[in-house]
Image (cartoon, rainbow, N blue to C red; front, top):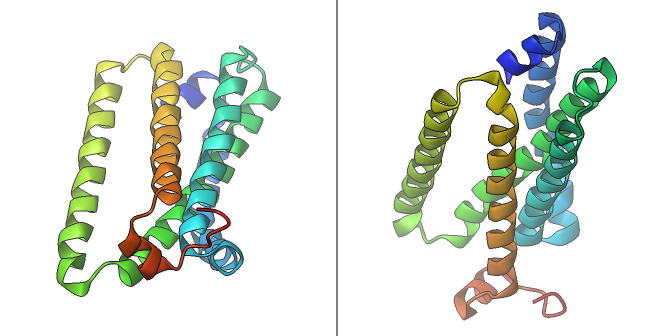
Length: 180
């Protein structure tokens, strides 16, 4: 991403500022996720975070594919969408930790937590491998689309799981029958 932004003529201090804003989204997500959990419940709050991230990334990728990325304003708008999408991502992370803490028996929590970290590390490693193979900045659109598809896929899987809970999940998370 940094190579792509640098090639497009964005000043390094602007790139650094947007990276800092992405980090700030993690702090903001702690407050946003608490509000989401109060309003929607723990599981639906996770879905809201994922869907929010997916929607903003869809718009960001559409801005990229519009071909206007050689101008400064669309590039800054693109980066702003990426930064805001991090709020959804981080909110889902906070809610995901709460789901593990409340819905998983303590005897299985370590196994599930370790498995989740392992799968996330594997996905990160695969994406890094893809980025290394497609190391030309001209492949940025492909990498952006691949990233978007992974987020949309995660949101779809989470929402499907939310719509088809098991009896045990219904007991653990007290599903609202109007939405399930």
